[in-house]
Amino acid sequence: MRIVLIGPPGAGKGTQSALMAKKLQVPHLSTGEILRTVCAEKSEVGLQAAQYMERGQLVPDGMIQEILFKELCSPACEAGYILDGFPRTVPQAEEFDAWLERRGSSLSLVLEFRVTEEILLERLADRGRVDDGREIIRKRMQQYDDLTHPLLEYYKDRGILHTVHGGVGSAEDVFAKIEQIIENVS
Ligand code: AMP
Image 1 (cartoon, rainbow, N blue to C red):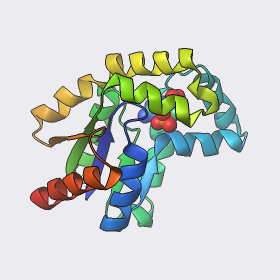
Image 2: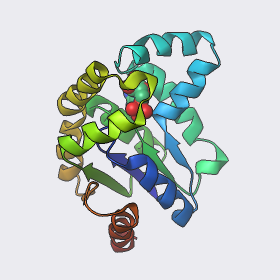
Image 3: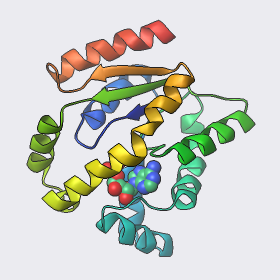
């Protein structure tokens, strides 16, 4: 299965994608993690990416797509994958659909993680990552609302969008709901 997760930072995508990856036996790819690894390598592209990330801005589409699409062609991704952090904008989603179509492929499911802003701020404050300063958090939320939220309509129109309430119940409760959705689409 090829699954995309959509939700604001702190909505629980990381925790749930690890559980899903284990159940489905497919890799979990987080573009944020991939980019942080690239940055740590201090290659030319890594240094460029870091400049955007430090400011809480998205890296250019061309950059993330080149890095990610290469990864998706690896044998490890043949049986499917869980994508967390990409696509992040409608243009990225359009590029991704075109890329998949060229390979005779398509997405199986898009999972929206819906959670209240209050819970998000609480979780992000606890997480305390370097780029999680309060101002940056606001910027990332704003960015999510402006750029990523429209993706929900995009995938709804394609009939593959499902929603889980990420802030309700324990991680196990949320996962049980996700398992049901997966069973219904497979
Ligand atoms: P995340 O861990 O998903 O919050 O991502 C951390 C940072 O990586 C983001 O603030 C962006 O700067 C960058 N990033 C991750 N995914 C993407 C993407 N699909 N497009 C552009 N930038 C991205």
